[in-house]
Length: 421
Image (tube, rainbow, N blue to C red):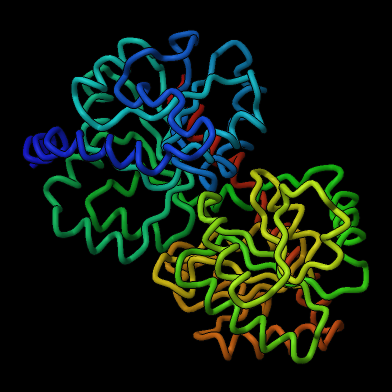
């Protein structure tokens, strides 16, 4: 099955490269270092280090506390971080700078991986969340590189897909030395796929160990002054196509009760900002982007679009309540712990399978409210804005929930250290 997978991957490679070009050609530096994905022209690095793979923004943010701890414990061992997206790579560069080497993740093809492994000569590979690449893990066995899957999650939906190719998945999982699962449900699914229970631990989620910037409150207050200090502010973050139309319906309804309500709209992918501008302007709303230089106009804006990287936490901290995207459409939801960490009441749609356990816990703590359509979303926005006391209760409970679950990074570090000995 792996041979068939490899042949199909080779045949699809020209189309994968074409898609990469189409998707990134209009983004500044979007195609920079694209050849690293083929194992060519890798940027300078020291071989023999720890290789950490984090796909995109969410995985990169989860990996950062762990990487910082690795740097403290093993200051002489170089760290190479690979990403699959430009946005993930940007987060690593912003947060860690030159203290690590950032490269793009190689395509899962034997010839490409051979070049990568011979250059890197890694002593350990750390995979973040659910990165089960058959040829990558086979190469780790070939080159005798131990592998640990940390912050591991496996939704029922993904597990069902993997069960269809169970013989291949068992071989893939055999290439992993240890798994640190986020929750027991994740662990049970890995075990059901054939991973040995004795090599698996439930350690919680690294995303609870999010470190808030020191000047976060000050930066949030700065934006409130620009927008208008007494205005209610609702943030809809990490949204996907098909959600903004529903959010706009809810916003229009909420504005009947709160005419000065400001919507902070932040798409999951920044290249979609022109689409959002067109949508909002077509409804005659005054729209302004974060990157616009004339801040005086922001006070009069109805909708503020976040089109920069690395400021999501600031905008969460500056809002009164949050909708977390990817949940009104079948994307599985984005990370609800970021708004929880700054104490926001959270609204989501029904599709939250990427964070099923965390979502259920937040619902039990009455921090998160699930809605199914634009009408219910509008009702909850209006209800929360009209009850500051209820919002404060949810805020306190959200912060408490995050604080109680911190410490995963130390547990996962233990697994890593066992493989480095």
